[in-house]
Image (cartoon, rainbow, N blue to C red; front, side):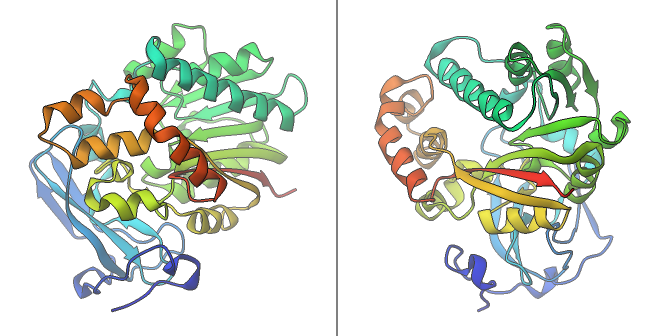
Length: 333
């Protein structure tokens, strides 16, 4: 049995090392339409890892493959290995992938809009008037519309063509593709906003390097992602919604996210724990898969389900144990 470094050892259960995964390489496994490749830890660059969770399924779209999460033996970071190749990732996001569609009606949509408005206020509080804001992974542009209404000059990057088209229909400037291809000038932006995107990136280091280049000295980067060290993971294991195989390539703790950002030229200023009940609701539905009543009850559109988990979510956030973390950091001057 092997434990991670102290930073993460208190929240991750030790697992037996799998020697077949200790070394990186060019090995690829072709399964149906998805092609897999082995990879290394994006945080520290080590190839040594141990199997953490295996035989994970795509619970959202029922792809036939199974997926594996490993833990870096050097720094403790959790990541998918082997993982879909960058060319295969498009098969993991079908046309009905939820985040690529705007939510306009219902309790969940109103709650989401309130959260986005709160985050736009936080962005405005950290930047001068009429600042330039870029959202990486902007989907249909909901946040950009709110930020634009608050006086920001906004732009977005989105890899999904349909979602980017919906954002452009609102008059937003959107680049379709990945950030490195957009060709923004150096020091173009006062703030970069990246919400629940970093866990999807096949090249985290390259993306953060590009963000560092296009941010003004002292500019802000906002990153939100799931927290692998939350009690949610201990409660639900393979049924944890935030694992989101195979779309989540990296699953961070607050400690590993800080190391990732520190290593890319950013100074972490604030780590916040977001009190959202979404992950608990979705995880309950996955855990009770096969029960029709659970599918009907455990959904964001059900106010009773939101009410049931809201006090727990607020309490865990206050204790620094939320399943969602937000980090505000600055580019070094």
